[in-house]
Length: 368
Image (cartoon, rainbow, N blue to C red; front, side, top):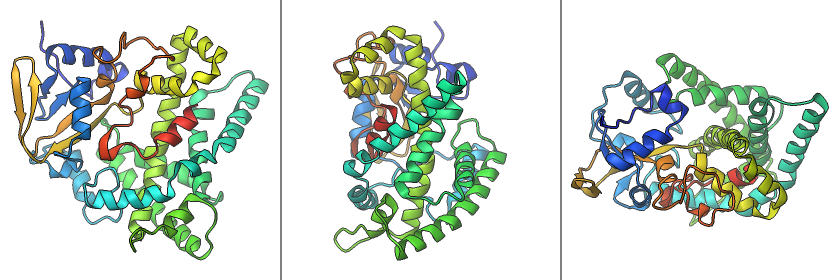
C-alpha cells in the first residue's frame, strides 16, 4: 500500500479532497508532509489544536525557513503595509483587544436586521430566474448577493460598487494555493486603489455617521480604546474578501450537495423548521474553508498510529477542517448528507477557540 500524501496543489485533490482525507486519517493521521509541516485529519486532534492556547495563528512565527518564491514575496510585501495584520492572524493580547472592539459593533442583532433585505435580494433573483427560465447560480446569486449584503451592512456608496467588486476578486487571487507572482502583482494593485478609497469613506463617515456597521465600528469604544484607522481598513477589507468569498463558496457547495442528494432537498422543503440544523450539516458536509494553520509556541504531542509524536515550537501545523468534519468517529456515515443529523452543529467549518469565525452568524443567515 502506497504511503498517503498531502498535496493541496494536485488538481485531483482539489476536485475532491475527501478520499485523500480518509486515507490520511486511517493510515497517517499525524502526517509529516514533504514541505515540513504536520497535517492533522482526526476530528479530536483538529478541534483540540484550534482551541488550544499553545499555538500561534501568525504563520510568520514559524521557524521553518520558507523556500517558495511566492511565500517569500508575500511576506516581504506585507512588511510595513497598513492593515497587513488582521483579526485572523493576530495573537493575544492584540487579538483579544481587536476582537472585543469589533464584537461590540458586529452583533447578532445588527446581523439579524439584514434578514428582510437578504430575503428581498434572493426573491428578486428567483423572480428573474423564473422569468428567464433559469439562471447561472454563481454569477447571478451566490456571488452578487453576499457582496451586496456586506455593502448594505457597511452602508457603502453605490457609485463605485463595480470597482469594489473587482478589487475584492483581485485581492482574493493571492489567497489561492495556485496563485502566481503575477496574481500577487494584481492583488497589490487592487489594494493600492481600495485602501485610499476606504480612507475617504471612513473619514466621511466620521463626520456623517449613520445606522450602519461602519459607523458603529468607528464609534465603538472599550476601556477608553477605539479601533485605529488601519484596523478599520483591515476589517473592511477582510469583510469583502474572507466574508464574501467563503459565503459564495458555501452557497455553491450547498446547492451542489442538495442536487446530489435530492431526497434531502425534499426533506428541507417539507420541513422548513430544520433550516438551522440543515445549514450546519451543509457546512459539515462540504464547508467553504478546508484548512487552517497554527504554529505551536511550546512542544505539543499528538498520538500517531505508531506512538506519540512531539511537534516542536515553530513547526507549521495544518488542521484539515474538512477531514475533521468527515471523521466517522464523530459523524456516522460522514459522506452522506443528512440535513436532520443530530450533531451537525459540532462541525469545524468556522474553526474554533479564540479564532472562531466572527462572521459565522452572517454566513449561516445568508446560506439559509
